Structures are given as structure tokens and as C-alpha cells.
Amino acid sequence: MIRRAFLLILSAGLVCLAANLKLSNEDIEASLTIETTQITFGSTSEAVVQYSGKGEMVISRAKLEAGSDKITLSEKSRASSELVYEIEPEQMGSFEVLFKFVYTDFEDKEVVQPFGKIELKAVSALTSEEKKTLENEGAEKLVERISPEPEPAEVPINKLAVAAWAAGLILAAAGIWLFISKRRKKAREEVKYALPHKSAYRFLEALKFRNQPQNGQMKEYVFILSSLLRSYIQVRFSLPATDMTTEEFLEDASGRGIFTDEQRKTLQSFLEKADLVKFAGFSPSQQQALDMMVSAKEFIRTTEDYNFLVPEDEAKSIGKALEAEDV
Image 1: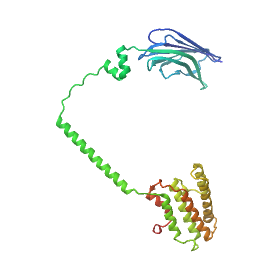
Image 2: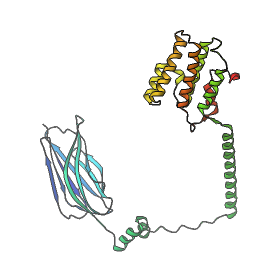
Image 3: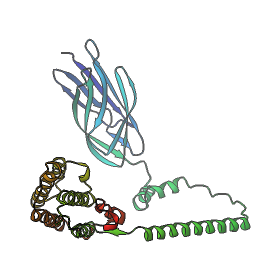
Image 4: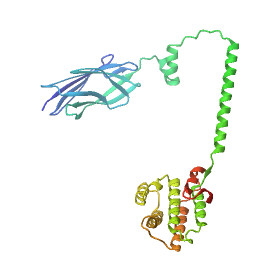
């Protein structure tokens, strides 16, 4: 088994104390040395990782991670046996950080080796007055006091030109507002909405007054009735009911969980009877044909929603199977 050795050195500002951590197993040996655990807030220092191994190097990607969001580590440069990172505290105070080394070998397997926890301390380089400003008024006010921006030089202003420009801008804005307002008003006036179930009832009544079952036109009657119900479902539930077979449609509806068990049973019974008439040459009795109308109305009744509106043109598409003059 190829063994690897890693050496991590964190250096920052003044040397305060040293902390050493080591880890090893049959695959890897590593040591982490912190030369100082005290960093001045607002400054950065380097973390250097040096690694080597017996025989062929097998490290394809390596990075140092810190288990705390209180410091920032970012890679600065890389060499075959050295990685350099920057460490920068995000605020003052003491932080206990779990350092770990993460690498990927040639087999593209990621290995994580924790070094252990290190106590880091970020100290302030500000004066007592600057600390008070930072605490009471925030960092932006502190920056203003330390590095005040120069006063902008006065620029001569042509008041007449400014007034003319402002007047033109106001007129342009007013024109745009009037144009948009008129378009919105026109759009509201042009688009009318309807309840899908109300439209469906109206089309069913139109079909009923044709008296097709009484005149022996069973197939035509069932075909239109089935088309009306499928079109209603398509508009009401956004299902492509008119383009699917009964089996495909029921499977799609079940997958979406749109209907209750009772609604699904009513719909399945209706569609299967309609398919027998349309495709199998079955001729229902007059009473059976009228019962199918009752079944269609019952299904629509259970799916009524007075809060669901669609454009009037879309609602009219439910009655596509009927001739316009009969609706």
C-alpha cells in the first residue's frame, strides 16, 4: 500500500504558541503544525501544506478544509508537494476549528483525514475609540472616519437646461403611463372569463334538445356526448383527454391523482360504454343513452369549482362537437 505524508504549516502575524497534531493509518500519515494561533482581525496569513510519499505520487487533487464558518481558507497556489492557503478571520474572538485534509487519488476516491481541533484567536488592531465606533455605528461608519471621502468639487449647473430636461422626462413618463393604462384597460375589456362546468351544462342541454336518441341516432348522440365530457375534462383539469384513448387517459389521470375513487369509477363506466358504441358497433337502448347523459352531468357536478375561471373562448371549446348554431 502506497503511503503518503502531509505537513501543514499555518503562519500568521506574531508567533504566540505552537500546536502540533498528527494522524496516521495504513494509507496516510500527516502532521499539522500551527506556529501561531493568534491572528490580527482584518489581516491574513498563509497555511502551507507539504506532502510526499514513497514511490509514485498518487495525489490528483487535494485541499484543506476548516470545519467552521468563522474563518476563510482559500487556495493561493499549488506545487507537486506543496499547497498554500490563506487564512482570514471574519470577525474577532476565539474559535475552535476542526481542520481536515481532503484528497482524491487516481481511482477517483475521495479521502477525508481530520487533523483535530485548534483554538484560534482573532485579536483587534483597532484603538479603543475605533472599537467603540465599530460596535455602536458599524463598519461603514468606521471606514468613513478612518478614510473620509474628499468633498466633491462643485460643477456649474445650467439651470435652464436641467429644467428643460426634467420637463421632457416628465412628459415622456406621463405618455408611457397613459399608453400602458389604455392597453391594460382594453385587455381587461376584451378578455372575458367563464366557469367550465357552467359551459358544459349549457352544451349538454343543447345536445338534449336535439332528441337524437328518440330519433334513433344513438351513435351520433353518444359520440357528441363523449366528446363534450372529454373536452370539459381537458379544459377543467388541463388533461389532453380528447387526444388519448380511454385507457391512456384513465392511466394518466390516476397517475396525477386528480379524481376521487368515486369520480374515477363514474368516468370509467361512462367512457367504456361510449367506446362500445363508437368502436364495437353496440347500439344502446333509448333509456341507456339517456342514462349516459345523467352520468355525464353527475360527474361534472362533483367537479364543480366556482373559483376556477378560464377565458370564454377556452370554455366555448368544450362544445366544439356541436354546431355553433345549435349552441
